[in-house]
Length: 139
Image: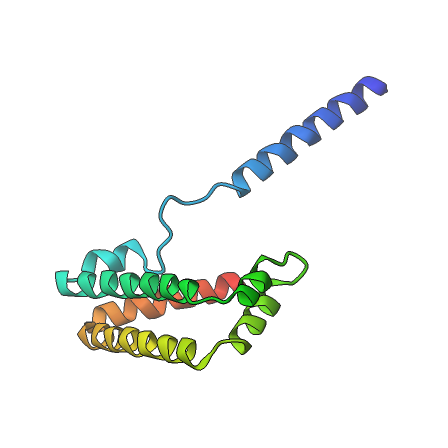
């Protein structure tokens, strides 16, 4: 009887460890677009995507550089949830920080609008399909 229990426990631990091992695997490159859709992009569309990524990165860096000591303390506080931190930091933004964000947002929005205008019907269909797949995963 004890031998059966030991085997069962061993088997259970093995399956559990394998399950956690596979669930923690991360994809090398996470993209919001499907591979099929990415293959249909023109060079100019790819450039617009890279431009958007570049501006988002620049925006994050420039905003971090303008953080005050109190904002940095809020971010470093481990007792506060991510949402609460974000809310508190955004409420504490100065007018200059808000203007900086608005400028970058306008630039990024114009890039996104250009990208959306450049999409073909086939690409739009592929995008709606991928959105549906993602929304079904969340159900």
